[in-house]
Image (cartoon, rainbow, N blue to C red; front, side, top):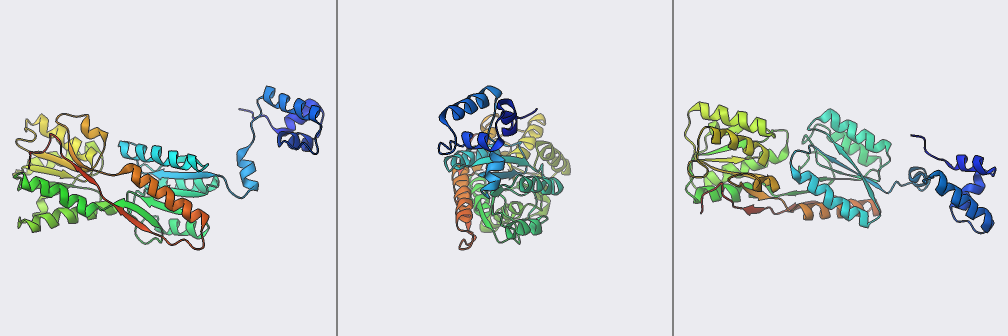
Length: 338
C-alpha cells in the first residue's frame, strides 16, 4: 500500500513541502487562509494521514506501550490486555501486542520488535523466570521502563505485579482436604515458571498442616496445555495409585485431565474432585463447572499500568515495587461441598 505524503500533496498543488507542512499544522501566521483551505481539502481528497511515528520521533516519545504475553489460549491474558488498553488509552497511549508462544527466542524477537517501534515502555508476562533476565535489565538500563505481571521474574530490578501463588494454593488445597479428600494429585506447572514453584510450596504446606504425607509420586508434570494435562493424567492413572482429587497449576491442564477422567468414567466430584489456579471464564463453560482460584485481572492491569506510567514520568526517582494481590477462591461443581 502506498501512503500519501506531504511531498505528494506539494507536487499535486505545485507548492513547497514546507508550505504544505505548515498548512496541515494550522500555521495561520505563515499560510494564507485560501491556501490553507486548498491544501487541507486536497489532503482529505488524496487520503493523507499524518505520520504519527515521525511526529513522535521528533518529540522523543511514541505514545506507545508494548505488551508481551506468553500465550493466547486462556482468556486471562486477553482480559488483561483489554483492561490495560482501556487504562492506557485514557492516558493517551496506544498499545502494540506481542506473543512469545512460551518460547524464549520468540520472546527476544518480540522485545526487539518493540524496541524498533520505539515504545515508551513495556508490560510483560515472561515465558521463563530467568532465561532473558539480562536482556530485560539491558533494556531498562537503556531507558525503556518495564513492569512484569502475573509471572514473577528472578534477577531483575523491576516492578512486578502478581498474586500470592503459595497462599492461593493453600486456600484451594485446604478446601479439598476439608471436603474429605486425602490423596491429592498436583499437576505441576513447568519448573522454569516461578509461579509453579510457589504453587507447589503451597500444596506441600497444606499437607504438612493437616499431617498428611507428601508423596512425590502424586506430583506430576502437567505442563500448560490441555493436551499436556491429558497426557499427565493418563500416565498417573496407569500408575495404579489411588487418588480422590486433582489440583492443577492452570485451568487448561486440568481441563485436559478432566476429559481423560470422564472418558474413563470417573464421576466428578463423587470419585475425583478437580480444581486449579488461574481460573477464567473457561471454568464455567464445561460440565461440571471447575472450581478455581481466580486472579483479580482488572486490578492487576490497573496496578501494572500505574507503575509503568509512574516510572516513565519519574525515571530517576522511581523505585521498583513488588505488588502482591489476593486471588479469589471460587468453588463450583467439580469439588465436593466443604
